[in-house]
Image (cartoon, rainbow, N blue to C red; front, side, top):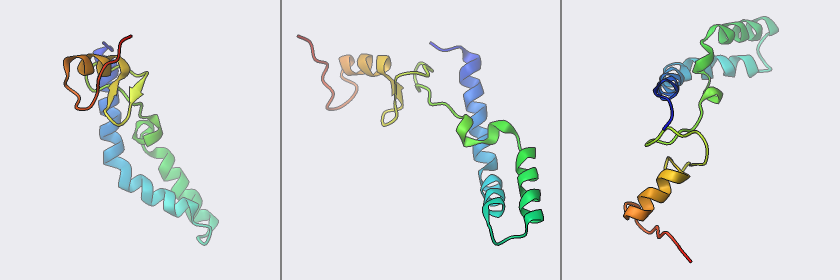
Amino acid sequence: MAKKAMIEREKKRQRLVNKYAAKRAALLEIANDKDKPMEERFKARLKLAELPRNSSATRLHNRCQLTGRPHAYYRKLKVSRIALRELGSMGQIPGLVKSSW
């Protein structure tokens, strides 16, 4: 089980990403538009730099919904390999059969 602080930090980052997504996209569009004057593009980059760092989507890290584990994460199911195995053994995931030999 991951520390509660790490799980809460990821939740906070997700909230910030959702909050600033539209503003960040608009500023990036202005900053990357080659037809606009250089001063306007530079001002857009400065405003982009003033936004909180954690509002960038690249700072998000996938974590297991059940345990908070950051590694061995299955995107489709949003759980880690360990949680996936436990759920599969209990028959909670349709179509998944734990093999043994």
